[in-house]
Image 1 (cartoon, rainbow, N blue to C red):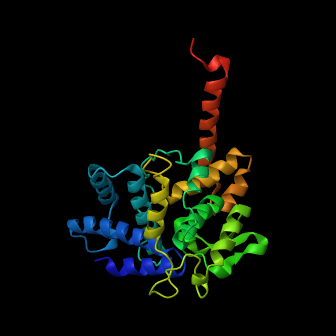
Image 2: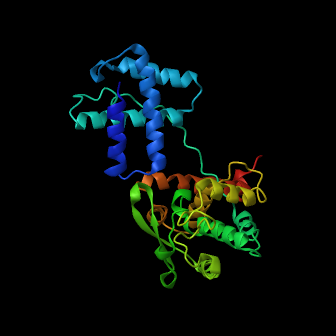
Length: 297
């Protein structure tokens, strides 16, 4: 039961919505988990799925100790799927639509301070090709704020050094332009002059047997962790934390929120506004440290 419609939905979001393969896998897992659960009730038709089944599923997820963010995402996947069924005239009503998502506590983004990022970018010493590449990976993360899925797919032809820009293929296959500063430009020039990249398609190409293939996200993740572990004991620092660092440092130095939104490739301003809370947090620290009336009696 349900497998045919799930496959139709996955094809729809991949072909028409142009969702990434990572998003596709997440939807597939969420929907399979849900329908494996409701199938225990021996349901044979879509109309037999009621609100009580969804509530039972959410309770089941909660007793499995899943956090609110994960449960909210799984419910959102089911809601999207039911909207698809209505669009295809398989269902008349979306019984999931009115079910509220669990409240998710927003965590402040984790980022490196200026001293930490300065030290990080000095660690790969550029004495070998791998070190030169690793230094550039760190620089591009910090200088552009790209996602790891975007970084690995950068093609050399999408880099315009004369214009200090890189064309990025982001979420939903949406294109945007990111700006690079002179630090990143110089490192790009040095790296691209390497003879091993003569026939490469991707900026961070696998240079062994697999032709025209890029470094995996796992490989890039491990590269970043190798160096960040030397500048902070915070184990949560990851490539995405460098994206947070990019946005936080821009705002701390006077960039406006709308510009940061565009540079990050956020669809909604609300996604970018989380960084304003970081600024407020830093302001509070400065206030408590410097203002006479902020100190204890």
